[in-house]
Each structure stands twice: as structure tokens, then as C-alpha cells.
Amino acid sequence: MSESREFNSVYDSNVDEVYRFCLRAVSRPAVAEDLTSEVFLLLYERQYELVNADLSSWLLTTARRRAADFWRHHYVEQRWPNVQLNDPIPIPLHEFSLENVLEQVQELDGQQCAVLILRYRHQMSYPEVAYQMRTSVAQVKSLLRSALQLIRDHTGQNPPPSPDLPLFGKASSPND
Image (tube, rainbow, N blue to C red; front, top):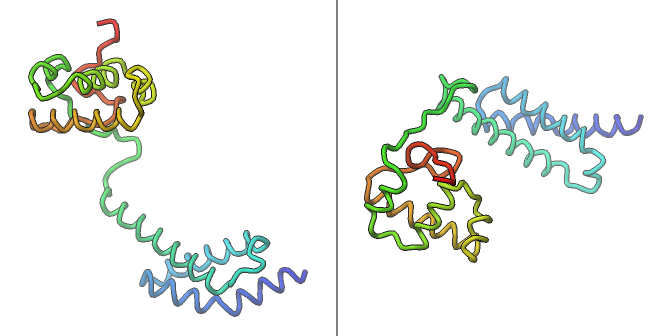
């Protein structure tokens, strides 16, 4: 029973300060009330972990983080108001094959070509490509990044960075 009295005394002595802080941060009374409740709910859940903590500082830091989360979510919602979660994301398809790119972009060296083929044609992961090429994952990423930059410079198109997405038209099987 003394634990609830202790929590209540902390709540009573700090709720106004936390609410004012939240109100200054978000400028919306209803949202400030919600943030204040979240802060004190988190305090209640973690009260045993915060035995020797400076509760005033902890409460205001938590309130600041909750306010930042609010604004982060607010801006995302404004940026994507009409997008539904299940809507497909449009992906531009490129109209040229990997072989054509390798022939046309003369600036690509042998290692860059090998990384492109292993990564996009054979759909290997970075560690698999590094193992096949007897190099490090960092070197593979560097080679891939420079190869893609040369392709962008030559074609004027920006290929997607993920092997899950088709880079050069339809994905072909390793047996081609």
C-alpha cells in the first residue's frame, strides 16, 4: 500500500510541470494530456527500475521524447495522407537487361561486373558475394555502390538498391 502512496505523491508533485512541458511542446491541450498520461503510465510500469533516479529529470526527458514521437508521427501522417497500408508501392521497371548494361557501360571493371552478376542475377546476399569473390562485405558494398553510380551516370536512371526488386527488367534464373 505504501508503494501506491509513494507513486501518488510523485504524481501529485510533478503532474503540473510535466503537463505544462507537454503543452509547450505540442501546443494542443488534449495531446498534452495524453502525453502526460503516457509519461506517468511508463513511470508506474518502471517504478522499480527507477529507485535511485532523479524522477523530475526522468519525467521531463520522457515527456520530451514522447512529444518528439508525436511530431514525428504527425509529419509522417501529413506526408502520406492517402496511402493505405496494403497499397502496392510503385516500382519503376527498367527496360534493359543486365547483359546490355554490362556491354554498354565500358567504365565497369571486372570486379564490378562480377558483383552485379552475383548480386542481381544470382540473387546472392552480401556475405555470399564476399565469399565467392574472396573479399570482405564492405568491399562488396563499395564495388556495388560504385558500379550502380556508373550505371546511373551512363543511363540517367536510378536503379533500385535492393535485390528483391528487379534491377534490369525481369529477373533471370542462375541457369541462363
